[in-house]
Amino acid sequence: WKVIGLGPRRRRGQDYFMPVYSSHTLDEKVLDVQQVAIYIHGLGADADHYYCDAQTLAETLAFDGSTLTIAPWFGDEASVGEATGGTAAGWDSALDPSWLPLWWTGSSWLSGGDSSSGISSFTVLDSLVSHLVNLGYSADRIGIAGFSAGCQFSSRWSVWSKKAVIPRVIVSDCGSYVYLNETRPAPSCSVEENTGVDHSCSSFEVPSPPPDGYNDYKYGLTLEGTKYASWSYFQDFAGNADMVNEQVEAFKGVDIRFMFGSGDWCNCGVDVKALECFFPACHGGTQCCDTYPDSNTSQVLDVHDQAMVQGSNRLQRGLNYVSFLKASNYLPTVQSAIFDGGHNDTAFFEDPTFVQWMFLASRAESYYAVWR
Image 1 (spheres, helix red, strand yellow):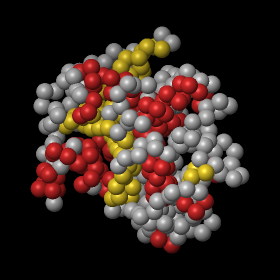
Image 2 (cartoon, rainbow, N blue to C red):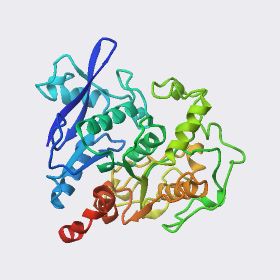
Image 3 (cartoon, one colour):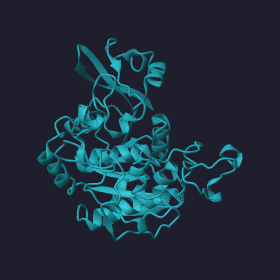
């Protein structure tokens, strides 16, 4: 594999580039490529890990020659600076040495936040998709996969993207979701326990009492009075209800699909922690881990009131959100599936349903012959 720069974007007299991992050149269309697969990393910003897993999958399926695998890196200042030496030459000697890499502060990237240069992470994905289409790749042969924080990024981008055509989006195990109206799952749909893979919700209502800011972005669509209203991608939307409503209508035509880990129901932020969430490989089994095996971090799941009204854990929140999209007729035929595993990006990528959705049904039969 290799690392290339995507750019430039000129701002404040300075050229910037976006670090991405890519299996093939992005300078021209590769004639043998039939599918473009874009993988969005999680909160750990480990794009290299996601890229290697994705490329290994393509190679195992003998799809590597016909698949362009891409993993953008939404890194922070320290990690990007260390990897690049703070210059374009640190990535690719062919790039203009005056260009600087984009980087983000904290986790702002997963909600469309502005980079060091004031360029939104959503603009980056818009630009990447446009670049691929301009090279000659068909939008219906581009798939975007996001897991965990990458799920939050991809699902929110699919709602807010200003592109006329959104490629296929496959997301898994978000920590929270952007709801498209003021209702949330009824309390009976969000009990603090493992409600299983057959969980669904048929009742949605305005929470009573409503938690402060529960419908503010990133949990809902309200931008006014939030920090997000000043972010470059949302400035046109803030205070413009008609424009927001147009985005919601456009979302009804998006092909977004959801997958959930059957064991991704741990929540280490609640008072009563399930013993099943203490894993021997995570801190020797002495701490509750709600991101295992993706990481050994004890408590990452969002337990703010704004998130808890969506459900008490990732599995429940995801199934509630799919129920919401169907019941509210935003996406009445939305597709969803369960994979065997906890908070596990590798299990997500290796699941037969993911392979079928990413590489399209006509190629899925090869999965069983090669993988099994």
